[in-house]
Amino acid sequence: MSNTDYLFATGKIRALENGLLDASVMENLMSTQNVDEAVRILSGHGWPMENAANYDTALKALEKEAFTQFTDAIKDSRYLALATVFNDYHNLKAGLKALVSASDSLTEGFIEPTRLDKAELSEALRDKQFEFLPDDMPKDAAAAYEKLTSTLDGQLCDLLLDRKALEAFIKVSESTENAWIMEYAQKKAAVADLSVALRASRQRLPEDTVLSALAPCDGIHTEELAKAAAKGTEDALRYLKSTPYEALANAFSESHIKFEKDCDDYLTEHLKKAAFVSFGPEPVVAYYFARLLEIRVVRMILVELRVGVLKDVMKERMRALYV
Image (tube, rainbow, N blue to C red; front, side, top):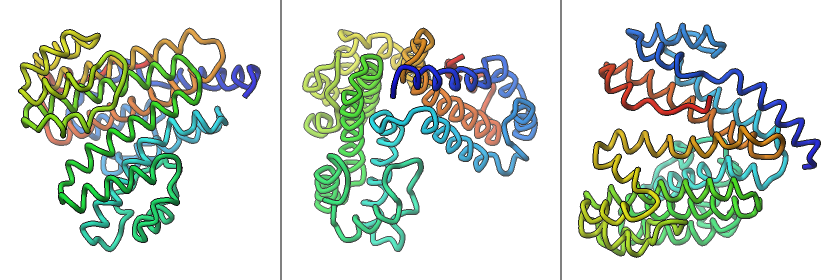
């Protein structure tokens, strides 16, 4: 895309940003007594929410709409892959586990958007024709299938493919040669590594298992982190406090809820840097990920209202927003 094209795309995205919900709206949602009241507030802000019963369907439609806005604004396939790579690997995980469990349908757990047609992916997996998958997915699928069939351990399969998804995301970011996007990918991988290592430290998973789940990224020595995590949570935190991610390690020391919130906020802060870009892919990419986070936060609030989570807990989980 040319600079002029990016200027036009950025203008469209800036207009869409005006429709994002701010903190005051989220506060109002959390203050409601039930899902019906929250849905009425969302409807008043232009969200197509007819009633409390269909909110999840409406939110999925909004996610699909966000992807359409993204693809309309930016045509470069390198950037489009940023929006689909994690879903591609999610579907690969779901399909492989369904295959090994002899499920009639491999597509039941699939999500969108994705580069891979559901039926074509299902057929490739059922026939074990992994070579028809794109990029590095053939060898990743083969490795995961071998792991799953030899161990029958779904967690090990998930850990492997989650790492491969992160590595694919980093590779896609590098193909863009865009410093802001490459930095975002590195931060996303780091946050994922922290989460994996700290969960593993509580389970006392073996060092080699932890290491196999960590994606190499800036600021983390994966061998040292895996060794520390295998010894326990205190050792893992001690190592992480010597890295650029000390603040996130401290958040985990306070509570898992705060850790997850601060991880999301850490990534959102990077997205906000796109506000200073006049034209280019940054505002388009930032808006897409910010919109997905906004929808995820709304879904979280609605679920919490439905199950009766305490208001103080809801506020503790509230993420920082893009606007």
